Image (tube, rainbow, N blue to C red):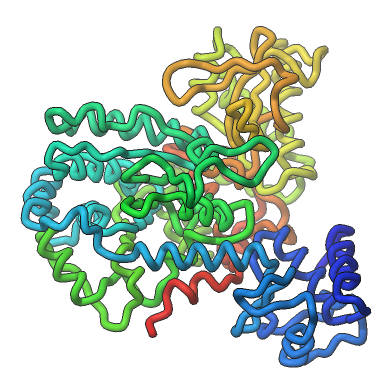
Length: 589
């Protein structure tokens, strides 16, 4: 059942007024586009048929072709390239104007950059450097890490997709090492970024460790990135504005840009980022195509990686890549140019083949509900608590919550507290209700208040309150997803280096208590141990991507609380966000 909100009706009424008449098709279509945009879609596919629940008037036709004809004749609906509030493309997709334009710009830029990089053409030298960095795999197995590194060097635009533990940040460090080795003394400017401060800090730390181990070519030490910025910070977000300092007229000052956690980047932000790249630059996206899509509209990483067939390259590019990587590379005729820049990492170095967590994640991605259920029952590093009644949660979870958060609660200073906070987290599929984040946060507070370890008399600003930022505030240098702790009258947040940043609580943008957080909010973060609370099977949030994202937030231990029907429903419910980006990127004519 589709549930419109007041803003959807108001938008529809506004367009009706703008069109100068009463049109039931326009009214329903406008309200539906508004609703779907709030749900993360960039368009409505009219040709897929429309549920009667979405019609605001009984006078609306049932035939999609009649909808399309009626909208095409509306003065507020335009064709691609026209300046109208709504855009209707040739495939029968209806967009808000801004999202069609963002989609068109994103596709145009990616396709323009889906070419070899003229700055890196010495394949023989690249092959030598690759052989120094990569040890041959046994049994003539294709080393996709090596292929990914070669692809990133040789292409202007590349995408490296893989789950946690497949070595994306290890590869990023080796790519930087390769680029510096091939620079002939002319150090390129390299910038690294991620959607959240937490992800950016983790990327910088991982790259630093790996580059220290690999070593840096003489004279290139200053070219190693010393700072990692959030995308908003890198772009120069303007206070209370959707515009950025860096744009097509004022490009980012970087020859090479590496973006981690690219699946979190929504369509509009990706469009602005691509627009702000210098013409001579190189863009490398790292991410996991199987994770939840961005909170905002679009599924850019998924659309980029959604080509037909298995991992393959054009015959011409496969020969180039085979020469550089020194190994056989699969090829396929008739692929779009973007295919030559995409590599999927499949070998997991974190979880062994018999690891319960690795096996569960694999079953979820493949849509194997029976296999996922068997993984949950296998024991080991996974504890499964079958719960149908949320009223049993407080008694069931008291000891796991106490054990998980005790190192954080007993930390002596903010630095220790923030370090301990990464060891354990509660993840919830929803915010509200007995299965939700707010209830879980209250439960943790009650436990430690009874233990005398936190005092709630100054609620919500008690000592050791963990907080997570919900809204970007460029002026405060605080961004959505940043985590901090309230101690000694200030909220302390980690910087991107060793220092802490302290804020008066009145200075914080919108935020939540963060003992528990939604799975969406956990993207870009990893924890030593995770406790996942899933809602009942009727919840619309139960999707394959949500469960996979939650399962892969842990490095070593996972406890799942919920009913088996909820888990099976999630495994069997892949998310689909309609857009025209996939078609635009993968067209072959």
